[in-house]
Amino acid sequence: MAAATPSVESAGNRARSSAALDFLKAGPKKLLIGGKWVAAKSGKTFETLNPATEEVLGLVGEGDKADVDEAVKAARKAFEEGQWSKIGPHQRARYLFKIADLIEQHADELAELETLDNGKAKTQALAIDVAGAAETFRYYGGWCSKIYGETNPSDPSMFNYTLREPVGVCGQIIPWNFPLLMASWKLGPALACGNTVILKPAEQTPITALRLGELILEAELPDGVVNIITGFGPGAGSSISEHPDIDKVAFTGSAEVGKIILKASAGNLKRVSLELGGKSPNIIFPDADLEQAVPGSMMGVFFNSGQVCCAGTRIFVQKEVYEKFNEQLTKFSAGMTMGDGLDPKTMMGPLVSKEQFDKVKGYLELGKKEGARVTVGGEAGSGKGYFVKPTVFADVNNNMRIAREEIFGPVAATIPFKDENDAVLQGNDTTYGLAAAVWTRDVGRAHKVARALKAGTVWVNCYNMLDPISPFGGYKQSGFGRELGRHALELYTNIKSVYVKL
Ligand code: ADP
Figure 1 (cartoon, rainbow, N blue to C red):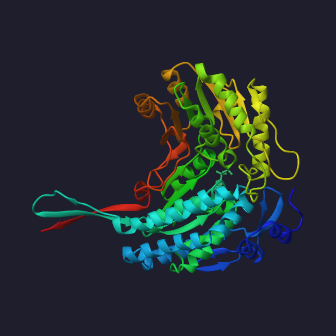
Figure 2 (figure 1 turned 135 degrees about the vertical axis):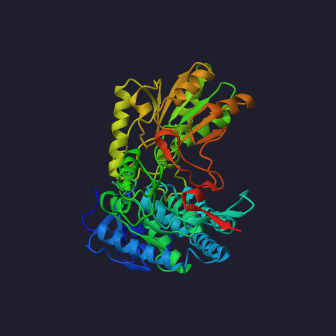
């Protein structure tokens, strides 16, 4: 359990980068409103923990409705005064490039803070979270000058054209699995289009968003363009989704909360985009190159300790190679090094929180009760830290709860299938539709199956490939709206049609 009093000293002692240590030791973290760091109006704070040690990393301001109201006022003022929405696109681009540069200059510090707060391996935080965040800001910096309207073939007596204008004040609620990266996926396109923002990081992992807030101030964005409210879902989050003066809400998190946000947004009919959970099928045909498919599938499900919305948790393997694949997956998974994310040898860190740890432990018990066969793992750690061993359940039936419910932990289910049709039917037999993968050397089959799978992203002979250039989002209960790529610009712009009588 958490220490009764914050042990920033001992938490800091684990930090290897002096910059990360300085940030943690600088005292309780505040909210960013109108370009200034301010304490929550209630004066309340909450603890954020290091999930590898259960030590308190620091105290963070607990924002609620009163703070969200202030942040919305600041964001509205900044938006209407036009110091962001109406500046030239090249100028806006320079700010985004500057943020990308600052992220890169502070890469080691940010990776370390992410590891300390979330638990993930620092090597991965550096290569994926931090590098990806910089790339995303740079990518959307490029878009600032390429947001086009159109001229339409109107009657000769008319000139008709369209303008793409920013939506206004955007509320952005993000999860704890990729805290900095998710902040960049949200802020990048919203800012490129000229919107102002209230960002709410997850209560489990507020640290890197707050450090990013400092870098945003260093990049000299006008006051009120980016506001950051730390706090809990009910309270800070719900005040954003219910707020009558927020024009759009973008959310990444659980389907359950996505539904609450959608209902709350009805008050002023704010625009909503939702990136929710998944139970993604990963399909292995007998002609797949197993040397690639086995480690690829393993990382597809265990990367980030399985706390990935597009994780390939249902591994469908054709009967002919089912046993062979299971044996190899088991062997590889047993070799995964689990430990403190600061250790360079660590491939898999702890889960993010006690709540997540208990939930995943419950699914380990459930899988055994449902009759699935544990080939590796199956247990949670008993010492300090929220560690759960990489677990493979074999002989799973697609109707079992461990194959239907999102576990969000390092738990794979392998399911045998008969033929291509059976693989697609079972793969699509889920309420979710975020991602899917197919492993085969038959190029025709690869494309046929990619078309047949009901998912927003399909990988062929790879897994978890993501690039800001390509859209990401869900079918079915995995949500709607597409982030990344040029498609995200649609989330953050309104289209205006202008008729001019000639
Ligand atoms: P998880 O269950 O994996 O923790 P959630 O969907 O609960 O994921 O959380 C994702 C984000 O949504 C977090 O920032 C959280 O604070 C926020 N959130 C949770 N509940 C609500 C709510 N009722 N309204 C708005 N935001 C919420």
